[in-house]
Length: 151
Image 1 (cartoon, rainbow, N blue to C red):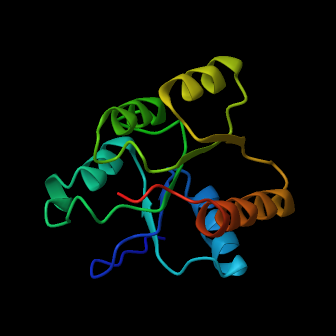
Image 2: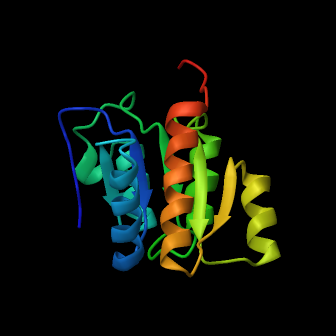
């Protein structure tokens, strides 16, 4: 379930390799009516290419960045921690809010994520309704409540 809008900037970037979790997150965001622009990417390498406008995404402009990134840690090709590290180290992407949305409740993952500059760390609830509520609240806070610096 990939949704792409090449004409307009993306507002939410969801980096999730589990199709079921991705579909649930997209449904929850749609149900909350927060955003109608969602880009789903399924591995860390693709996320880096998208955000740094290279490879298949070389046509994108670096200024067309998401308002928030929902990032899983357990990704193929390049881990979520490595994606986070590269994004926070680059002046073009370091100010984008990144929310880790993962099944890992390991203390070392939480600690490392915050050391690398994550804005929020949320463990995916196992229960369907809790997952929906968590994603809806994420969308509401990061898209409507949070004030980001002007870039």
